[in-house]
Length: 337
Image 1 (spheres, rainbow, N blue to C red):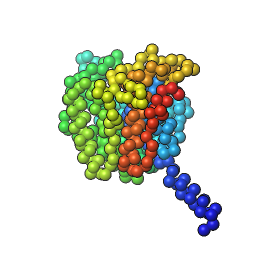
Image 2: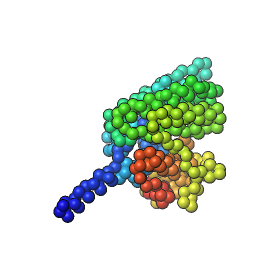
Image 3: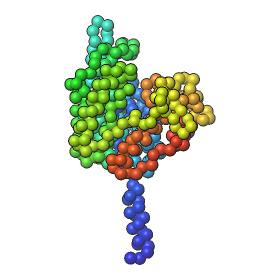
């Protein structure tokens, strides 16, 4: 074989081996990009989420499709903006029976979340859209909101209060079955699937019965995933310090802390990270906190550790050999917005 032909075949084969796999996701605000999409319910915060981080640092390995940054020129569906293959939406639930309970003092009203008032979409609605994309790998990450809505009432002022409901075995079964149905639909389309455990703390807070219920649902997910040969990922399974905080390189994020307005700087300042639509950006102290400036969602460094959990699971399940995010890469997210 002529030397030139051999080289061309080798290069072609090498490019084939290094081609990025297409990856998409369905789920809730842990997976929905932290963007100002112009909706009532959005995550316009000075932080990055795990999808954004993987798209930024591992685009050679994982292809999330076309990126559209704004609603004005965005997607003509519930996503509004973000990556082509990420159909996750803030406030979404695994089960389309979920309702937001409004407390009118004398009576309550259970409102569907799948509509303009909340600005979300059930995962049931997201799955057929991702199926049409025919991605190589689909991540299914939801369920926390189901427990949150089930155990919480909202006042007309938007204040939240526990309603005393304890999820029972039938409720846990319904959430697990819903998530496994999403898995089945995506697998039937030809995608490999990575199923996330339902995070215990995001919906339960300090509510121990709710935490126990989520653990029970996760046991059902484990059983269903094993029967299907589907890999699972614990998004919050990264190493933690004794107090629940995390250490990245020589920097420690304190558990239980939330970024405030004092942690934000105007756009154009030095040493800043992600910016919000109002041009306020993550300043040098923003990264100190576990929770971002909306008081609810994991901050950038925590989401970067989540991204590494996803990489680990993909490597273990599908032998992708994707390099984990380094400490330097992770910390740089907070300084190079």
